[in-house]
Image 1 (cartoon, rainbow, N blue to C red):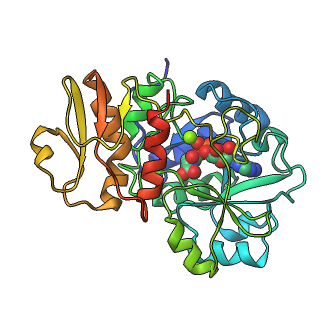
Image 2: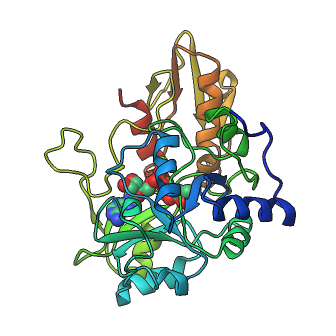
Length: 322
Ligand code: TXA
Ligand code: MG
């Protein structure tokens, strides 16, 4: 509760301050184009442990290592020709690649939760890029929300979630709004572990083949999920979420999508024109805003299952799981 309730500004001074805190082993919330991350020096085991305790995250759930470039990524992971192709096509950007770990003792076990693979991403956000240059070390960062709750796409979300107890570097509203798409490159056919801010079709077009699909929704634990964080219940607001709503019931708050007669009743339109990129940017903010009105339920209109709609629907199904 000792950090100020206002974020650090994304200028040279703010970035230098955030870099100094990270180098000193502190946890800092940082902007990326997908969602805000709760970052720490990935080479410092104690600093990384603070991420888990701050977020209330189970230790078995590994973290993504964020680096400034593909060259930096190759110091930590082995890239097959196929993974190189994806990295070259989409980095910097909203794509995380899981590859065999080859960094020796650079990255402590706690980042990878003991796995012999590592999840790596090169974020595109200009403030994050400058920060990574200034820190000069990989940054471990999960999404900057309390474990199991809605991800943060604005500095104000992070301040609210952690009661100002975590310093935040402000980078504005995230321009993608959904977490990165995660691809496992250690299987014969690259496997989609998590749908996200880079649409499946776009990746498959570069690969020239369909991605394999991971079974990630087995909460019973018979088939342990491959991305250990992909439990069904996740992104949970306080209010129940009702999907594919075609009418608004008493006491509900509506999240509309596209031009609709229901729009009059909706305070929150994910995209009035039915644009999925816009809906992705608005999704977590509007879920938070709708939840703050204490409705009997958050009713969400149907979202098409194409492009970014796949990841939006994935998050909504998890938000609706009880
Ligand atoms: O967009 C994003 O990916 C954001 C920003 C901050 O970069 N980060 C993010 O981190 O969403 P997190 O921790 O909320 O989700 C990372 C997911 C988890 O489901 C975790 O289990 C999975 O990545 N993961 C991490 N390392 C892995 C590995 N070696 N193998 C398989 N899954 C892994
Ligand atoms: Mg998360």
